[in-house]
Image (cartoon, rainbow, N blue to C red; front, side, top):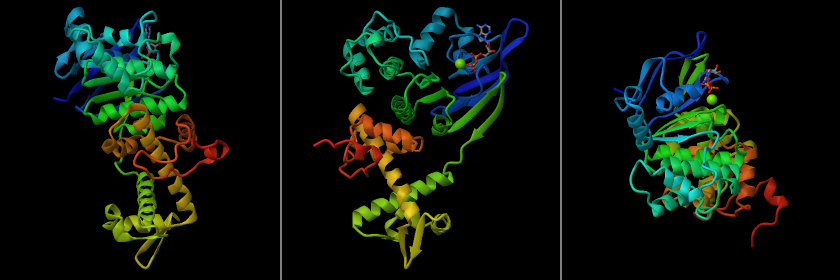
Length: 362
Ligand code: ADP
Ligand code: MG
């Protein structure tokens, strides 16, 4: 049996409105699934039923073999609190409690409230200096990060997020998605409702709802051509940096050396030039590589400076989110981080337009 089994799920409002109409699918443990579809297509209804916040008209949802609807209200609330972390578009923080108290409130079902544990969860989302602020004193992005800390405090194995970045600016969107990527990396199952195709691309699988019916389930090819290109350009740039040469021997790109087809494909795309066993970047390739390196190293900075992620995990974390960063968002992150000159490992971050207009830190 899969971790989540959605079986012919139907939710009817009145006589005519089917929010969900015999929807079925499964989710494996540790999967990251994006749910997309137009407004009113039943996405929130689906998430609420999976999470036990709502019950279906007919059909069934099993989470780890457990049918939430078959439990009494109290047992369902407990199951929810212990196993599931919710992240909503509206933050639902209690307005008269501090950030710390809001997170501690969520510990209630789990164990005794533990202030140090709650403070740590907030430090992990970059809110270590906002523990005693009220929600109204936080920005939207900070409130959403507080919600993530609250959702994580009980170590849930299932994260349900309903348009978690819907109300955020692009920098906070990148921060929140970085946090989601971290959660997934830790082995949690993540289901995220989103309108944003860039965010949906970060997931491993996409489910589309249309008028309460599941119309499409697309599996993403693991290595789409664009990502392969960016990885190759990244590798060439890094090797050039390491050896201090223009052009590098194919053997110094071990992850690509075995696949001559990749080189030929990228040469025909005008990204690289091949000659005498050496690979070099064309002008177009160099421009792209500069952006690829810049967003990768800025993403590492973001993980390092904002969340205190350990150095050896930065590369992996950055790889997960960088493909969703457009040049505009990359620039905003650069401004947010005050135009850092190097990545946390000390390699230079290529300058962008925004850096030329702003003085660099001493
Ligand atoms: P989405 O999240 O995809 O925008 P929803 O799941 O919120 O869609 O809603 C799906 C459909 O069910 C919509 O047509 C909506 O109007 C209807 N609906 C949702 N909640 C209720 C409710 N409490 N009463 C009546 N209709 C509802
Ligand atoms: Mg909705």
